[in-house]
Amino acid sequence: MNDFRLFPVQASTLAPQVDYLFFFLVALTVFFTVAIAATIVAFMIRFKRRSHDERPHGIHGSNLLEFAWSIIPFIISIGIFGWGAVLYANIRRPPDDALYVNVVGKQWMWKVQHMEGRREINELHIPVGKPVQVTLASEDVIHSFYVPAFRTKMDAVPGRYTLTWFEATQPGEYHLFCAEYCGTLHSGMIGKIIAMDPPAFQAWLAGDKGVSVAEAGAQLFQQQGCASCHLGGPGARGPLLGGIFGKTVKLTDGRTVTVDDNYLRESILNPQAKLVEGYQPIMPTFQGLLSEESVMQLIAYVKSLPPAGAEAPSSAKAHSGAEAH
Image (tube, rainbow, N blue to C red; front, top):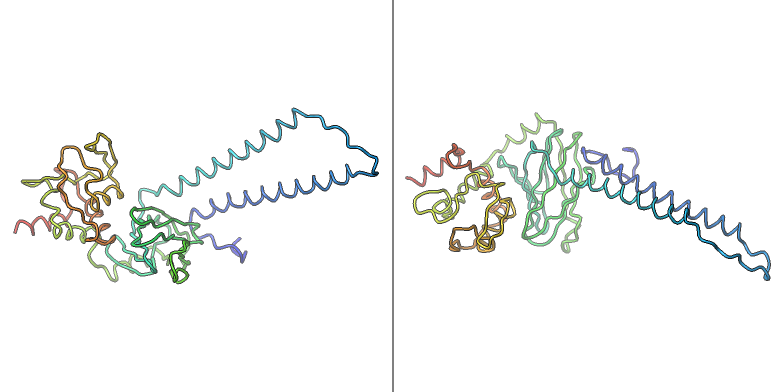
């Protein structure tokens, strides 16, 4: 298959699964196209009118035939739906041991930041044999993160986060496209995924290691004054954030919501939208004050905070100490 020039290489664990379904659909389409065309030709020959006086015979129904062409397509359709649903669930559910990478699309580039702090533009270095979860955001319009060799495509939508993941199976460089028309220079919004052997990737990652995403978020947390209300200190007027990620909280209107990336983002940029029960609507909005990258850094920091009573991460302890001084 890799030698088939019109088909991209299979370079991820998901690629064969997607291809199996694709080729099954193609084979099914070809089968029915040929079968229907052959039947039409056979009927044209078999029932050709041989004289102007010939009258067609009456057609009588067949219950067996009616059941056959109703039940068989139904079974095939349900089978395809089930196959696609399982594949979609696999694509949407990243493994627990995945590496996390933040990617922000904007006209017209992909901005990448690894959790360890290293940044890239229009390039994404990843290790082979390790799942990578990509959190996508957009600073302007809808973009689409598309890697044909990985059979991966996910929209980057303004105002919320979307996720995709993949695991490269062989080293190499693979095309990264924007698959959504996003403006006059859309065609130039291209990049590449560079899959490396794990030792080479670790060496590359350590080559220009800056402040990690969580540490950058800790700095923002202090600079924006979030710590005074959300770390459980004296006079705290907001919910304690330690260990809150992934938990369910009750809102003032009686609803409940799971604390995930999108909820945290909304709470930072539109704090009154979903107010936690027991707290006053006093938090100001940070809409227009923080970039998408900064919001992602804040969220990474909140996710790193341990539950109350547990030991705080080094970044949190360092900034708590700085505040005390």
